[in-house]
Image (cartoon, rainbow, N blue to C red; front, side, top):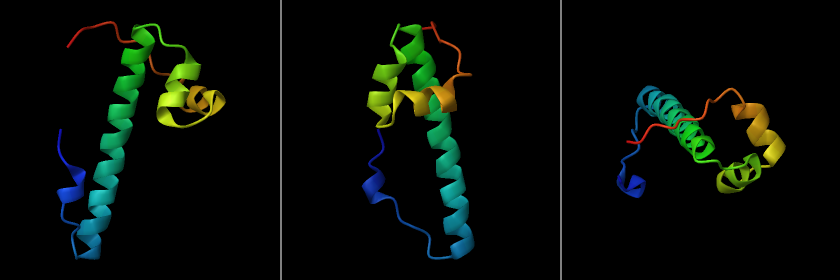
Length: 73
């Protein structure tokens, strides 16, 4: 895993904001894949929500369209 504390923040505002967008998209993708995997392993929404640090209702509202992923990597 990459140590995110060692990433240099761009000094150019355009580059920094582009990095923010890229990181948000990456975080969203990782979150959705992890939720799909958790659902595939039988995790309830309450456990997923707890792992994400949000309420069960918020997790379900934001991620209810994620399908369970039963494939192994």
